[in-house]
Length: 350
Ligand code: SF4
Image (cartoon, rainbow, N blue to C red; front, side, top):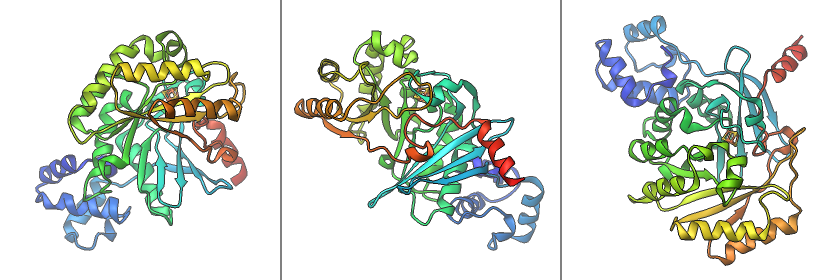
């Protein structure tokens, strides 16, 4: 049993099933997630017999690191091996007032957004809870700076791997594990409507939605999941998500693609859409980060600025995401951890 992937309640059940008192689970959680222990021998306040049993039946195993790259701007990207030739990527973005970790939830992605490097590589498999929380576990214990925010915005659609993602979120929030506040943990979704409703009940963290287009016709192309869950259904689910306090706004992510979705008319249509649907929201504009053979271009700066200004004039808090880590392919939309990276590493080691 890899204990890294067990939520507080699952770990309690596991301990009780072994004839241990429930408080053992709290001790284990603290050792594993707060102190970063990876060997049971380090857990000096556990009885020797219990530790010996753990050595036989359990392990603490994060995914193996294949590559560790640091960008000129301090952004750091790890490539993790998740078996069978699959690799995933995790990115840490340091800023003066916070440190944000961008976590992957799937190896590849089924949603296949055409502007996204991960979407182009196809889908390999869902990550386990241990592989998801293992990215935070690893980052927390190798970084000098604390991880203050987690965004599930790496490779994959987190709400299509719901059963593994929710226990990982619960560990992020648990006081005995990472103790992050709900506002500092963000799930980013392309709009899996039924799972947005479930998340509201099971673990209501901050929600970011990849909007990218103001009409179904354009969104069907840019976010193909829109054919299944069109804008009207998506907006209704977001209203429901916002209904109980303390969830006060949705962050809309909007990638700006030159000549595709970046005109002033598009900006006006976006403003009309969210006003009509009465969604309390902020906008985060992401100028497209090019990757080989993407077929899309980044808009010129004046166009990006004009799009942002229009949304601001319409009364929305709007930010333009600063590109970070593009020299190590760690910027938004560039994550595509494929096995070629692993081959390179193996060759270098030889
Ligand atoms: S943008 Fe997100 S949902 Fe779309 S293909 Fe990329 S990882 Fe998947």
